View 1 (tube, helix red, strand yellow):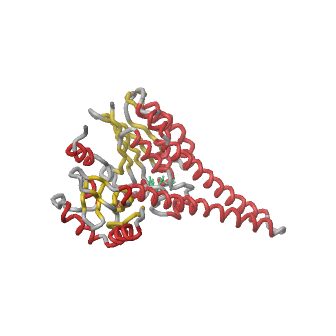
View 2 (view 1 turned 60 degrees about the horizontal axis):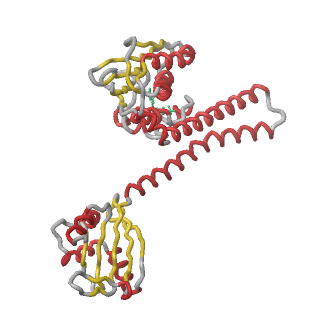
View 3 (view 1 turned 90 degrees about the vertical axis):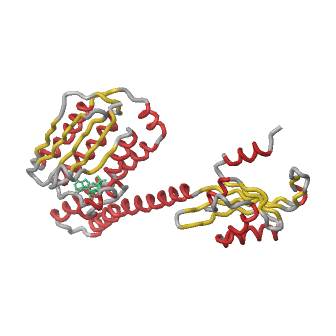
Length: 353
Ligand code: ADP
């Protein structure tokens, strides 16, 4: 037979709050989580509990309505700006009345179940914001493509030079669309559970091979701007990582470094070994990034200068992909201002075990 004491302790382990209210508006039972979620002081007992609802007039209204209409309710309540709970009110009528231990019959009671939902709401909000950003980012090149196609179709006498100029714009904007879509696919792949599972079960690989492959893949871009793309480091460092993903992260960083470095400049990739981790620095000679943007820059579609980034053909997703990959490897990424006062230095730390 389960004792009352056991049940009460058991209820305190529940991840949601439970409150039992009688028809004469007295709290007969509550668990610890109920107080926590409703910001009610831990030393308040059942007697004083109902008065605490005064600070939530909307919830109070629903409780009173539930009793007068003898009905259930399920509602979200904003307790403070960033604190939302869902409260399910379950009305027990006379037929469902509870018998308390000392055989006092409780007629007409209301059970409140209080669930914390702030994190769901926050993630819903982020998702809505993300969809709005994606739509906006896709709409801009599409509008330009459609506009130029219409002009080309409407004007039969268009000069060949102007025609070629418009076609080049259409080509550039289509490439931008393709980059955005491909980066979105990468991000959604990274969110998949199988990727996290693979990353938790990694074999040792040589990071130097991956750095050299990434540099080789970007060499043609560096050559086009006469940029000196150099690597300083070791011959071999073995550590657990997923080579395909890490190469993608490094390519994104080196690609940005080349994009933002002026012609004839230098982009360096430096590898350093520490006791517990290794460090990769991608150093460029670009305009640098103001310190106030050092964390925001990893957000999806964030850009210091939107116009400039569009001209350079970015998707606005490159750094969020890099961050995602590095965090999935239990590493860290940050912008290091001390190493290089001109330009930017992106630093990755990866644990050796
Ligand atoms: P994008 O595709 O726009 O380059 P990223 O996510 O790669 O998107 O970068 C986000 C923004 O961060 C860029 O638009 C740019 O403002 C800034 N940024 C990234 N890398 C550099 C860099 N090496 N130097 C200066 N600014 C950079």
